[in-house]
Image (cartoon, rainbow, N blue to C red; front, side):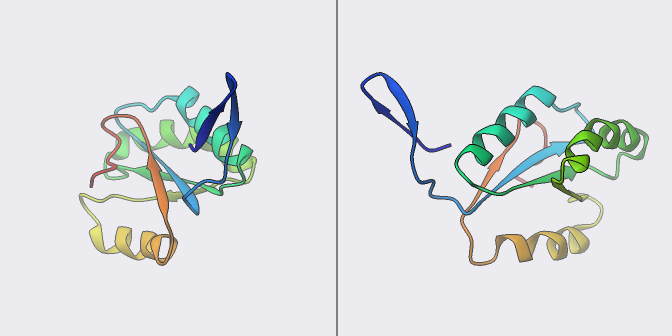
Amino acid sequence: MAQKQQRGNREAKKPKQDKTKIVVATSPPFSEELLGRTIVAATSIDVPVRILLNKMDLVDRVDAAREKLALYTALGYAVDEISVRTDAVHTQATLMPHFAHRTTLLVGQSGMGKSS
């Protein structure tokens, strides 16, 4: 997130992105701490957050991932469920409206499918 140093104190400045997409996956398990920290950082500078749950094709892990995300959906954060590997057409149709004419920051830990 955008920050600048000013006499040893960190001060938020206007971000260059319009939105933040946090990419999590059914496997490997995602860090709830990283998810929470990213949401706090983005919302503190008024950048909307959307969560992308990737790897929905790993059906034996879907329920556990949804359970971990239940708190965030209850708080009003949108979660898009996608599977880049097995349903690229649906994934593209789901994501393109959110990326068109916007600068979007993709955030996520290693193995979540950001580069997919």
